[in-house]
Length: 351
Image (cartoon, rainbow, N blue to C red; front, top):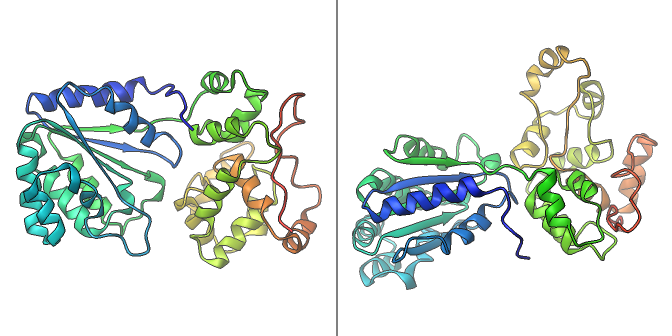
């Protein structure tokens, strides 16, 4: 679904200015990062029509494969580049690819080179990007890298690339924020939904907002949202999945005492936070001291209320009875009573 691009003027201005500098022969790196659904790909699409005349746009994507494609995002460019780079990519020989890529980007026209989802990049892609970043200032190129900063770990090759990029002569960091209440009301306008309810359920995540609006005639959290949440959940180990599913039983905000009663292995919460499912305020080992300074110590486990509903709502019935039975009365309705005319309710549980 195509949605209006709201509250992204600053990001678009930075991208356009960087593209104009590339026309003058001054290259730069733009790091566009944020959680899934925050609108990184929407910004990439929007910049296409804003580029200076004569600027070409090259887009390659990394994929969440068990074994990533070697140089996958650069192979996506094969049909849009010259024969030397195309042949080098076909051979897969890394040195040839780097040299041919550099020669390709030195030639006119100026380029906007976009590599999406570099958190999934293979090592050869990361090495090639590091090579390019170190030379970017002398190229008529704006190199736009998008990634999910909530899925980074210390052992990922991408962390080395980000370190190199931070020392580039021209580097811009863009971190789009979640939508505000007024922006959500603008997106919901014309539907039968209550804007405050949509905002509470999505917490301003643009993807969730758009999917909720698109499914306004339905009675469940949209299947696309459920699939997106469960896709993240299933990348955890079975033991960690069980713990996250258990947290879905309780209200969206829980205190440390209840958390300790439910979860003995805090590595599960750390893994779920890395997958973008939970929001943890600090290192579990330091929760006690951090929480002691608060009048009402609490933890917000699920990053978006809709994630909790998607997880809890897709259990087999026996699991809901086994786990949920021990917490009667602890899980409130997903949201306050639904206003008349609205149609968002929690998903039906699987049987």
